[in-house]
Image (cartoon, rainbow, N blue to C red):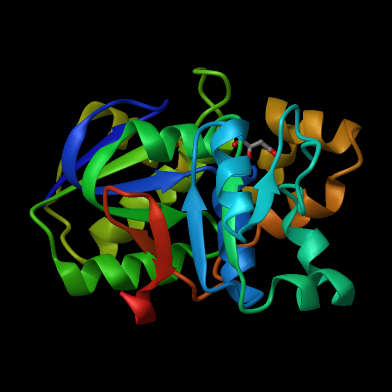
Length: 236
Ligand code: MLT
């Protein structure tokens, strides 16, 4: 198996792309499916999201980490623990746009896109194990085309686990190797010191950090084809 990792969004053409935005787009995507949504469309712009909203979709996302005017939800997974929000989203289709996460999803050209974060990492590994592909491209969303350490940490944990559970002899590029070393040397506690984590904490989203930095709390694996319409693995 060949594993390639990209630290910022790239317009690559590949078969399987695993896209990571720990803070917070892919963590939010898992939380939305955990909350019972039926479908998640990821679009790059606010204008496109508002078009989907006109068709009856709930609109979720952020700009500058905050809720967008006219949207139903922001990009906060812990908001979904509130009873009134849960009853609003259950069974609904959602469209989402975020600064970096949905951009990474839209830039990658892949016949299968998988959303990963720390929450669903073991389930993503299980899914990949069943697929047993020849090649996996891991794409980190980063922040404004710069590296985000929490995404690299998650990518490294994924590479490490794939090596442990699928193939120790994985053929890795240098970026995958580097990500693996990052994951081996950092602890989850270090992630609270990342630039993005500190920015979110300063805006009052500490609870989202605690939520996003837990490994294996979600069994959801959001999957899509080129159209960027995600369903959970059981519905694909
Ligand atoms: C993004 O996609 O840029 C993030 O999800 C931003 C955020 O933390 O809300």
